[in-house]
Amino acid sequence: MLRRRTLWLLRQHWWRRRVHRFFASLRMTRVLWFARFARWTGECARPYVGTPDCGLVRLTLCICGLRLRGVLRLFLGLLGEGFLRHFSLRSGELLAAVFVGLLGSVCLADNTQISLDTSETVFAVLAAMNTCGYDVNLNASDAQRLNIRAEVQRNLQGSDEATAAMTAMCDWYRAHQARDAAHDLAQYVSLALYLGGPPQFLPRVKEDELPPDAVPIAAFGALLEKFYDKAGLHGIWVRHRANYAALTERYNKPLAKMIFDTDIYLKLQSGGYLGRTFTIFLDFLGDPDQVNARNYGTDYYVVVFPSPEASSAEPLKMQEIRHTYLHYLLDPMAIKHPGAIKRIEPMLQAVKRAPVEESFKTDISLLVTECLVRAIEIRTSGTKQTAEAMRLQLVDDAVKQGYILTRYFYNALIPFEKDPAGLRDTYGDMLDQIDLRQEEKAAAAVQFASATSPELVKLSRLEDRRMLITAEQRLKAGDAKGAQELAQQALDKKIGDEGRALFILAEVAVANKNMDGARDNFKKAIETAKDPKVVAWSHVYLGRICDLKEERAAAMNEYRAALNVGAALPEVKAAAEKGLQQAYEPPAKAQ
Image (cartoon, rainbow, N blue to C red; front, side, top):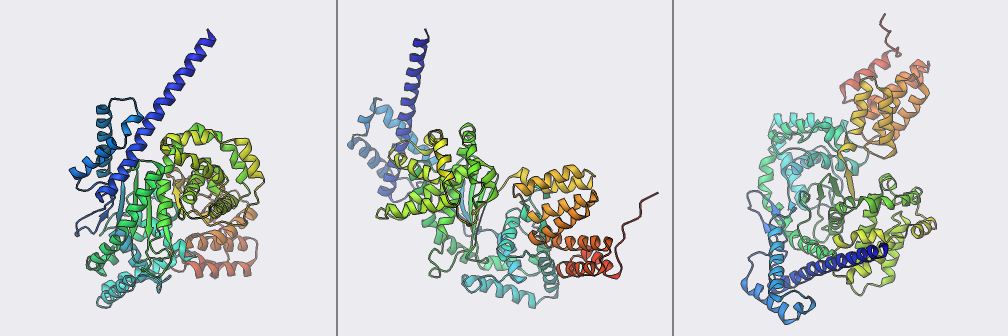
C-alpha cells in the first residue's frame, strides 16, 4: 500500500512539473516572440510623452499603434517556423492562447508602474539649497543649474520680502546642515519625496512615518513655502519646462532599452508588480556625481542629476538606475519565498566580519537579493566578446566585499539563460539548490576586503522609521528601560542616525544617574551625529556634567562648542549662554 501511494505521489509530482514547464515554455516563447515583434514593427518600448503642460515623461513598455500587418507577420512567423509542433495542443487553441497572451502584455503596459518624471517639489527644494550655498560640483553640472541659480538671484534682488524669506530659510538651513555634502543632499532628497506639491510643501505623512534622515529637517517645508512664493520659483519652473522636457527626452530611448533588455533577460512580463511603483526623477540642480535611490515600502525612487553630454563616461547614470530596477523586480521574490530564504539564514554568520552594511549582516533576504542583483549585472556586463576571466574577477571582488552568494548565483544563471522558464518560476529552485554546507565552507575561506562602497538603494521600512521617535516618546513618558531597548536596537541594526540613537542612550544614562555612561555616549553622539541639533545639545549636556564634577574650564569649552554648532537654534543658544554665565546646578526636587 505504501509503495502504491509513493508511486502515485511521484506520478503526480512528475505531471505537475511537466505542466509547470509547459506553461513556463509558453510564457518564454511569448516573451521571445514579443521581442521579435518589436524588431518587426520598430514600435516596442517607445515611451509615451505627456503633455507639455505637465512637463511629464512617463515611460511605458507598450506597443504604440499596434499594426495589423505586424500582428499577421508575427503569427505567420509562428506557423512558418513550426512553433506549434513543440506542443500537443490543437493549433487553433494554441494560436488563440498566444494571441491573448500578447494582448495581455500590451494591455498590461497601459497600467505599468514604471515612470520617468520631473518634479516641481524636488526642483523647489534643490533651488532653495542652491540659494543657501549648496555649490557642490557646480562647474561639472549642466549649464541649466547656473542659469536657474542666476534667475533666483535676480528675483531676490528686486524684493525685500523675498530677501527676508531667503534669510530666514538659509539661517535655518545652515543651522541644520549635515557635516558632509553627500548626506546633506540625500536628506533633502528624502524630504522632497515626502513633501506635497507647491505652494504649501506639507509632509504627506506623519513625522514618525518620514524617512529617518528627513526627520531632523521636517520643518524646512514651512520655510520653503514662503521662499517659493516670494522668490517666484514657480515662474522659473515654468520658463525652464522645455529644458526639463529635453532632459527627459535624453533618457527615453536608453531607459526603455534598459528596461526591455532586463525584462527579456529575466523572462519577465513588463509592468512589474501590482501596487508597486518605480519612478526616476531628473533634475539639473544637484551634484552630477550623486545618485539617490530609495525603497520606501512598495515605492522605488531614483533621483538623478545628469552630467552634460560629454562631461563624464556615464552621464545618464544608467547602471545605477538599472541596479535599482533590479531591486524593484527581485525584492518581492524574496518575500514570496520565506521558507527557502529562512533556510539560508546561517550564512549571516559568515558575513559578520565582512565590510558590508549592517543590514546585510542581520537580514538574509537583503543579502540574497543583493547577491543575485550583482550576479545578474556581471552576467550581462560588457559584450559577447568580453572575456569570461574579467567577469569572474568581478564576481571575486563582490564576494570579497561580503556578497558571498554572488558566485553561486552567477553559476546558476548560466543554465537559467538556456531554460525557457522565467526567473519567477525558477527563483525558488535556485534557493533550494543552494548547498548550505558547501557555501558556508567557501565563505569561511574568503579574505574579505577592508572596505566596500555603500549600497546604492537605501531601504526604509515603516517600523524602522518609527523606532527612534518611539524611543524618545517612551523616554519622555518615564519609560527609560523601553527607550534604551529601542535606541540600542536601532544602533545595532544601523537604523536612522547613529548619533541620535547614542544621544537617547546618553539621556537614559542621565535619567539613571550614570554620569560616566552619559558622558561617553554624548561624546560618541558628537562624533557620529548628522543632525547639528543633536551635536549642539550633546555639548550642552557635557558642559553640565563637567559643572557637576566641578570641572568649570572643561564645561566652558563645551558651552562654547554648543554655540559654535547651534547658535541659530534659540533653545540651544539660551542654554549655552546660561552655562557660560554660571555653573549648572540641577533643579531642586519638589518637596
